[in-house]
Image (cartoon, rainbow, N blue to C red; front, side, top):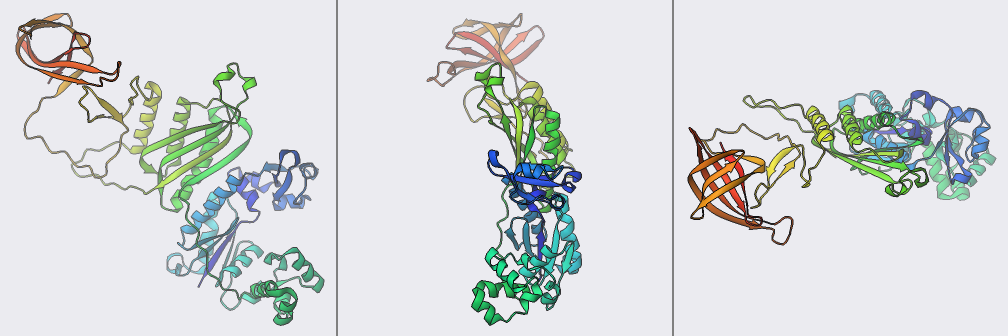
Length: 514
């Protein structure tokens, strides 16, 4: 058996700063938590501890320690950070345990043929979390707890061979075992400072004085505890969140932050060999009614603004997603300053297509989607009847004339070259809107039709065909008689569709057959 532990020191600090510039993470950082009236230090990094910052300090006490970067704790950032660690671990093995916040244990047994020796596995495990903004320690051993203690005890990569657990763990301080405060006081009074001093104690007297907990800690110090991993459920949604210190009102700085969130999401998707075709962006707004001229038209303070993107083809391209988000927010800007940003992507399988030898080339899906987004920003998304303006027309299964809708473009990987029709067919070219006409009747059949400033003679006719529907609606009802007429003028003639609106009594030329 071979287990690897990924340990993130000062996890709350790294989760809060992993999307910032590297210089921010290297500076003294303290995370504050609690009510606004009494914020206290929840976590800090080594640079802050060197300046005297301690856990449970108030904000004023922390500020007195010198120049610090103070951040308020956002649990959503820690959740997304833990999910990012799990994504890194799942790229190595399907057996992954979310041990605790900032700690992930992986069963890497049998992966030597893929990644090499334990030292090479450790180097790969050390590199991948850096892509998500984490600086981690790696421990590798024959049991999960020994790997965890090695990762907590030493920076970098620590590989412990089977049978050498007690020897390697001996110099570590006993605090790494995380005993209770009462038990730690007992160890201190006995002079127990390291794993080695705890491991050599006689087990029976130790159990009599400290019970089974003390005996379990001794076995941990000896590296003899074997346990099964508790598998973690892989996340069904990939999300990143950040809360801004100052609200943003312009789209340009907002796009800069969205870019960092999208890069983290796409990196997590790539580590799982997944893509996304559905992106959900939630913006927490900071709006105050007393600062607005038209206060009644604005929602309550700290409202939420939601936008979704549906892509025709799954993608891992963060630049494409960013451009689509920019175009969408430019066409539908939020009505207030942005205080919090949450971006979530639903995973989808990558679709790989191969063009056929006789199949015409289609535009690249990402560029096509950007072009369609720009068109929607220019002409609008829907017309007065609620139909889309940009997309592919599709006939609705209805008897209502000229009833269609516009659907988003979808690439079909299984599309084939259309076969040639065996014989030519007529196509109706519709006039939108229909052309108003004057019709003379002879024995209740059209004799002449005048429209567009010309008068045409009816050579042949077929009809009428009566259609009606939506009688329950005053605005949407329709009732008409349709005719197919061959109209002649001079040396030319054509086949037209003409109808009479029985509700208004008016005649219209609906289209011409090609």
